Image 1 (tube, rainbow, N blue to C red):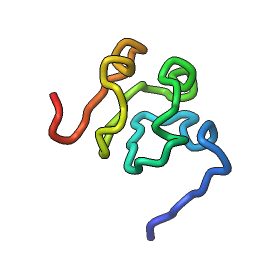
Image 2 (cartoon, rainbow, N blue to C red; image 1 turned 30 degrees about the vertical axis):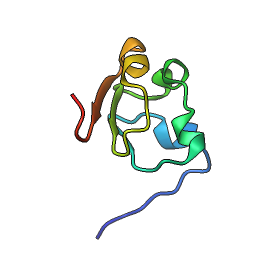
Image 3 (cartoon, rainbow, N blue to C red; image 1 turned 120 degrees about the horizontal axis):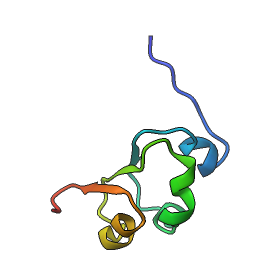
Length: 71
């Protein structure tokens, strides 16, 4: 049986993650600082499902960045 957990804030949601999937265009998620949140995750991997993040910034901060339809 699937289990869905809710987080009260972004830090709680990302803490210990091995993969982050951005699946919304909401401004509070587009504005995330890749340098700041990198320490919250176990492995800095992100899939930008809406193509709203700057790949150069995220890769420069040490993230493995993937997006749909982008190299």
